[in-house]
Amino acid sequence: MSFPVAVLASGRGSNLAALIDARDAGTLPITLTLVASDKADAPALRNAEAQGIPTFALDPKTFASRREFDEALFANVAASGARLVVLAGYMRILDAAVTAQWQGRMINIHPSLLPKYRGLHTHRRVLKAGDLEHGASVHFVSAELDGGPVIAQARIDIHPGDNEDALAARLLSREHRLLVAC
Ligand code: GAR
Image (cartoon, rainbow, N blue to C red; front, side, top):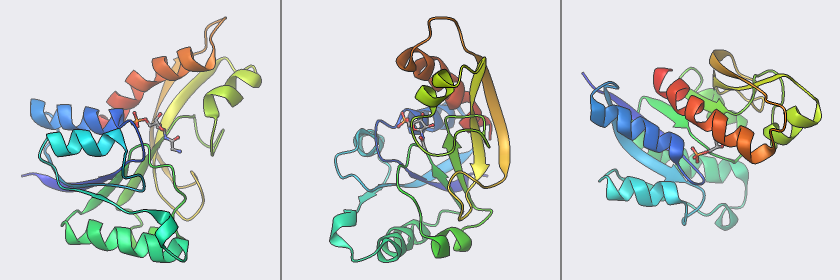
């Protein structure tokens, strides 16, 4: 049986690509019902289109409020038949009413060992703090930014001489495995 999943992505979409690869390899029994974005030019959308996955983009600037934008976006998500939403590099804060509606049915991948480093620039912040380890977390989405219950984490060591790009790149391959596993 294949589980219907919608993905929201704002950018590159390498985590989406990992889900597609695992689906194609037969190791992840999902149907991707929709890939949606707040950025019409997101590479993630182009990849989904090339794979024959339905896509949808909405421009936040054309909505009067966050709630109206999210209601329109998630109306499409619901209409796609998805029973789980995966935020895979989706860079917009969600409206609290929408997160409440999807509570327990929406997960996010975040590039830090939550509860450390919620929000942006996690690689920079972990280096600045002098931490010895870094990681990624997959968690249920709640109204609190990067604050919902953690499902699983991946950890990596920070090497002497690591910079933001090196750390991000080394973590990304671990993110892909973590997201698929979750
Ligand atoms: C990933 O590193 C993901 O953890 C991060 O954005 C990147 C998206 O990469 N997400 C966040 O920072 C969410 N707050 P991708 O577009 O290649 O999947």
